[in-house]
Amino acid sequence: MLLENKFYRVLSEERGEGLSAKYRVAILPECNVYDGHFPGDPVCPGVCNIETIKECAILLCGEQLRYSTIKQCRLTALATPTVCPEVDVQVNLSPSGEGYALQATIADDRQTYMILKGQLDKA
Image 1 (spheres, rainbow, N blue to C red):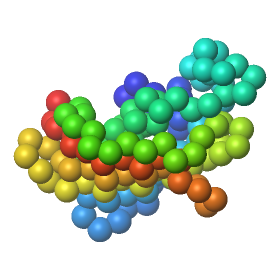
Image 2 (image 1 turned 180 degrees about the horizontal axis):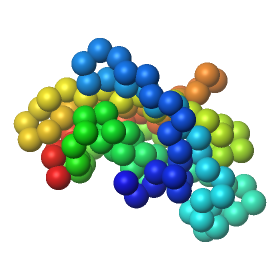
Image 3 (image 1 turned 120 degrees about the vertical axis):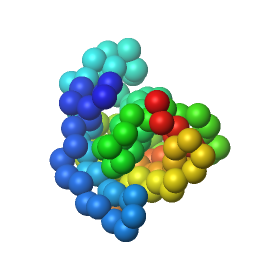
Image 4 (image 1 turned 90 degrees about the vertical axis):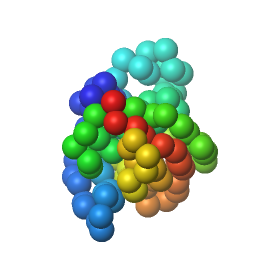
């Protein structure tokens, strides 16, 4: 796990049906990624959000995974550690090919920050 306990910390896990879970995560404002990503007005980099989703998928299935395809990735709002210090990462996996089809969102009670669909293969 590259970003867990550096960029984000998992606060809770709520398992759903099958391979589905919602992870409540705290975005850690002290992460050094913000030193170069808009200091003073930090914005969560999209690539960090994409990695956070993958790491939550790994927690869900218990297997090492890698992205093989990203079919859709929409950044629908700016996530920042000051505006949204806690978000929900919803991960839905379906067995597919060498791994899993992925549908995921990052959101809070007010809005959705990212929508992602793709394929995660076993690493």
